[in-house]
Image (cartoon, rainbow, N blue to C red; front, side, top):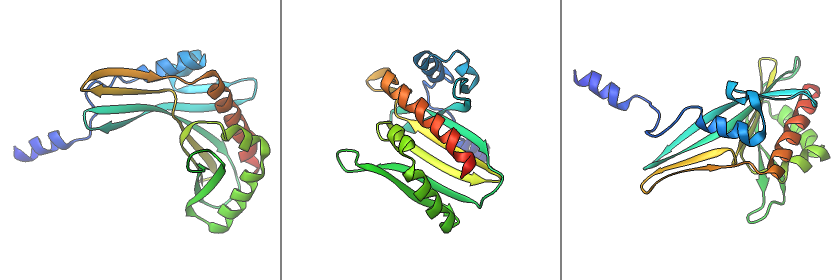
Length: 189
């Protein structure tokens, strides 16, 4: 009996006040994507399609719901590698840095050099307010995961409030441009 009670109390669960799909619906309205509620965002003009899902972070008396964009592309040749892209600079953004996570180091060095040489990609990523951007090659596919700071919801329990952080029109343009650049670049890497 105590074991069942312990398992029930310690089982992972969503924070109280979390509304599944609500942040995704706000993001769909914000980005002008009608079918985003189904979890897929696409740009037919540029030919890419990304999965979007909510990610919940529980904190003391609050939780944050962010939206994570995933772009999955086939890449038949290559070796397993995983890296993270982030901005450099303490107070102002001065550039982009690639951080090795795991896999083949020689492949990482080659990828880092090719990614940072793409002027259009760097131009799209520099003003983009992203929290996390990871890139991994596994089982013949590239998986890009981008977590934007906008398109998120902050829910506090004391004092009680719920705020949606919208994606600005400028950020929307940079987000679309960066996903289009990755869609064009990744199959050739």
